[in-house]
Length: 304
Image (cartoon, rainbow, N blue to C red; front, side, top):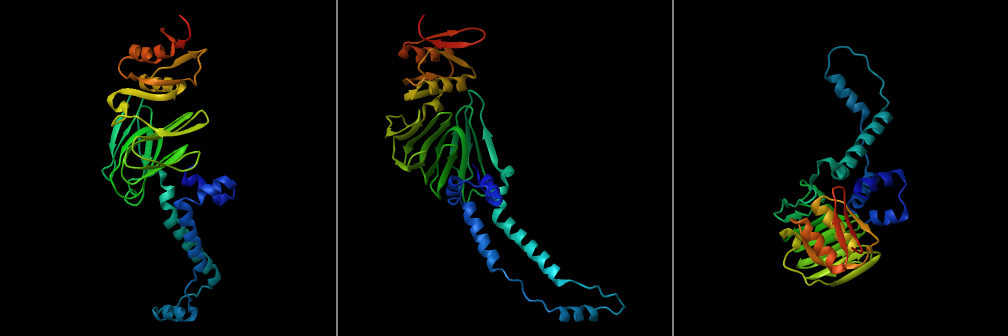
């Protein structure tokens, strides 16, 4: 849930307890508190009605009809306008979501993006990100759906938010992958803080954090200097078969049908992004599986 959703539910009084616990940790909630204190301390300056009227009368020489003014109404209107101005000042950044910068990739596509602070991110296939360029100098925050590699310049806190977790760094190189049923963070350099479904963990170089099949794993990852997919191949270390096949689908823009296969069995290996036949062999042979390509579908199954 993003800040706008939290704020709308907070104003409507429909935030659940667990949603409120998350909301109070956000910058938006802190802004609301500052706004509330400002409104409580606001007192309009006293207005001398008679002195003001005399000044107006002295400036005109012609006769005019004097209108009766209900100054209580004027005060109320002024207070409402002031409240609206304060709310807009504190919350304008959280409601300007349409001004966010967005990038996305299609099946089999990667894309490199240089961020405003010269940090570099590379999106893997079928992934998307968004961030605010206007607020970047104050808040380096990216919302990610899919997988991306980040080479972060040193500076203020750098955050990557996904549906299943939050990664915070100062300057480092790492990947974040958030796919259906699979969440993984790999640290290639520096240190990374991960807030997933479990407790917050710290990752050092070559550590990884993974959530899959309702289990959480933190271990040392005997990894290369960069993610393999930057070099047009996908590499896996003890990853459930379902995620391996989903990655194959994302890289080739295909649909694979698994028949009578244990989708939770672990796979260690790699496949290329430019040769589908070799990729299918690389997945099926180590697991004693068979594949078949027809005009209408691709099948992986046991047997001949």
